[in-house]
Length: 457
Ligand code: PGA
Ligand code: ZN
Image (cartoon, rainbow, N blue to C red):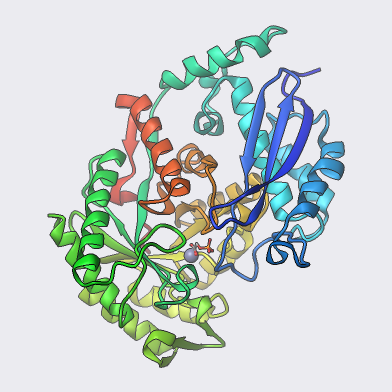
């Protein structure tokens, strides 16, 4: 029996950062290696995402996940027992076929993704590698012997391997939220994420240092105005503003107050999440009681790009407005990163469709939008072939799970978005990336501004 075959699989209900139930899977291989992973949950979800299976009924607002947990503990465990966890593609194919539906509506993408990620962790542990290095598939890094004694040498081997860099790896440019909004802040403002990134930072650690200063300065500005009211779902300051644009002005003020040159050292990224306030080509900014058609919204965003140091905009238009996306991309895509989240839902097929139409130049990658690591990777591979950039992203409902940090590095995606610079479920991810950068030492590369998506002329 191969040492990386699955011996035992178990799921349990755990709780996410909004106090809602979610699925954790734990998987043991024949050599004793263990992998564990927890799935996150979105609030501003795209309609074409794979299904997050919830129980309905009275308990926890209908959000319990006992059915998804049971699917892992019965049907999935039975099907995967004896399957080789080191062949992620074949394992994920088993999950896809077992479910048998295009959007995981039978077993639930929360059930399948928990297992898919736990398997990757177990396989990495068995190889004695940190997950990101296992994902690289670096043959030289896979040389730790498997033997009958393997189970007992795994912890020592893993420790040794994780401290020994084996060739360069690229740390992602972080996109970090300063003000939350939209569905993550009771729709206090319409725009969902006001974020910063640090194009002039020399390394990942420095990007975090600069962001920490900006985050603090933004809190001080809000306090001075008597508008410091806590934080939103992803840890960004609560957006107590009179207009959406006021958040942009305040962000520039915070960047300057922190001692940085806006645009040069620290720039702005937005997630408009326009599907939350628009459909059928009509958009309504509730805060300002203003209505637009697609061209009106595009005009407003183009004016913002002129007036503020914005380098990236996610979901500038709604998921049903491909034509609007195309027009916006034609108008701004050569100098602006235009990210498809609800538009692309981490789907290789939708990335190809968007590329054929000329919409967006960057894909957001959220594994729970698809339900397996392999399908998420396929979206990234399709994007890369088509000249798109990528961003690995957390969800607004998160946990201490740090798998996505390893995906961003192991798949060499170049950018990572996990929310703000506060709250443990966010900091767990930033801190994991810091550890990896430190261990890599001189082998650590930083993606920098070269990771941003741009349309070619
Ligand atoms: P969500 O938000 O997890 O609530 O979907 C994150 C995003 O839109 O990028
Ligand atoms: Zn988004």
